[in-house]
Image (cartoon, rainbow, N blue to C red; front, side):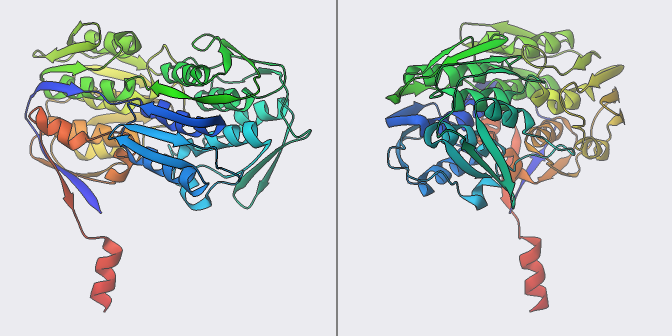
Length: 433
């Protein structure tokens, strides 16, 4: 087991290089299942979610070759099974993209129900299933598995309206539709940058997808996709997390390898709080020297403020003067991390989807836990801002989505280290023996 130990109170100064987009990588890797030949994917982040997905593909018969640290060659030509590994699938949320990819390729798929972060309520895949069924798939649930089969051996084009602008459903239906006969039209789709990235990847391999980034996506089925090369976009949420870190801790960071347009929804709120931001072509200089101001935030689908930045911005607002209100507009609840911040001296009251934050003078170091990926990032930010020492358990969640987080923070002045600690169960076994 590992935990992070942070001695807070240090400002951040220097340069941070942003990695490839986690949310694009975990969709594009399963999308390689649709491609005949080798896909060379560049700018892949070295995170545990990526490792698990690559292991799933390898167990199914794919050839995966490391070109360099962030470049992989993936060849799924040798895959003959439509059944994915049960044990790994249950550990990662994005494994559900294999339903769409396998259904598109084989006309059938058998995939375990996905795992990953749990925000305290069910994260359904009903919109995914709705899309698959509209294209002619039959769906059964069997002992924790989703079994999908095209009634006529292959899917057909359809008009699909998503009841909510679901990122996962948008991508999954898009994957399944690549080989569907005719045209598939998906309305009320999500518009996040990584959805556009997935569409661009598929088009680079020979798909015919139009409208990604708008409210309607049209996919004309093709006979096959062939290999090629593609580089992932930078990670919007990783960049936003470092922006929030310097906003809370103070200092000045040059954040490189970003697409500033993707950051507008985050940049606007940080500037409202008193953070200075200068944009370049592919970089942003983020500084904070004065006091933080209260703001109100509501999470919304892109181009609104992202739900994946909600815990990080809430942590910074703990140190802002006055009363701030956060409204979670995507999930029923995403506030499990609040009790951890309260341990550190934060003054937060949760009422349904709202969190009312009364700014405090400072946070104090404490032993806290990462309850999910972005809540874990919030705990790191809190530790950087706090007086004293913060110890964070559950860092396996953080390492699902942040490449070299400890090393990147240390390089800009943070006092943070990753420490191995005994597994409590192993310790108990030793005591009993």
